[in-house]
Image 1 (cartoon, rainbow, N blue to C red):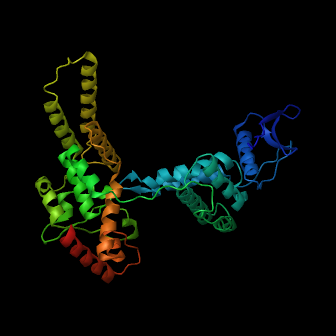
Image 2 (image 1 turned 180 degrees about the horizontal axis):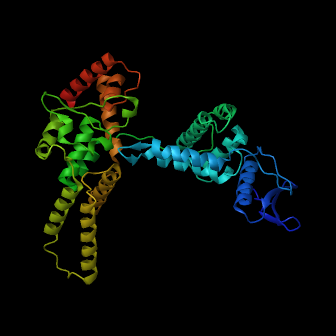
Image 3 (image 1 turned 90 degrees about the vertical axis):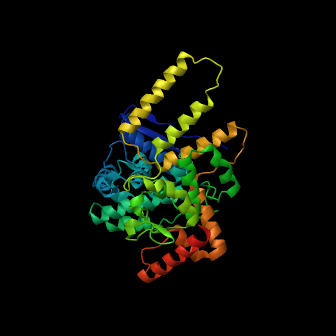
Length: 407
């Protein structure tokens, strides 16, 4: 049976907005204001969650005291904009934090931060499940970020420590015990599916795919490879990215490159030492050259609309050069794989869809099967902050042996 949602109503005698739930009138503040509509959404969310928590104001409209949620969010955001920065640019975490803060502001923006408790956090969590249709893992990550915001607020003496300790009591959603949807785990991609796609990729992209598959790199690591970061003096080369995912832990990422991957990389090491190995502009130039060669025998006329499209594409390429787009990003790398799969399908070769992260899982699965769990952790770079230097050296030696034998 569908639940009938009470309406946002106008109490003309007092000028207040109200909502009537289970025969009880709840006054929301001045009719038509953003604050009253926010309070309406919050009240409905709490009612649907069957655990109403906030006190309901009377037509006299008492207001809460202390720092509001909106003020807390604003203060935290000013901190986050300077904290979540890497190489002078905002990190992805800042965007993730924005997504986590939105439902909090949407439901509780004008509430006093001191009044925000565990039940309120559960309402926000349920809103993420019901209204935003987020998966269980994403919901847990976003709730964890909200707890982090209140932890920072305690350190800045914006709220009492009891607020943060109360929120800590809200545990994460457990598998099989929530209505939040589950996502499919990332699985390895079969080697035959990778090999089938290579003919439909440019040489640069084909090299990226093969090197990532052999070395187990993250997509963000293979896209920014430079000759100056690759030590070629030993039989097993070592690639040490200038920036990597776990550098904030103080760890160093060293990626061994075996003979198979070395042969693929050799032609690209002749360029300037500080330039990127795989450049999207070179890849696009190769693609256009071969596209024009394939289309040289066309019999249909070139219509004005096609000429306009070519001029527009040329202008876009010129703009790309001006913005110095000299290396692939993880997003453009993933799109390039999707484009290759589409070209294969157009040519009559059906390949199941896969993405670059699956190459890393393929390498991890292969190494774990042959060398064990520890070896897979080492080759994939899953080191922790408390790993000793001796253990790190032992891991690097093991990783180099794996690369020499199978990379």
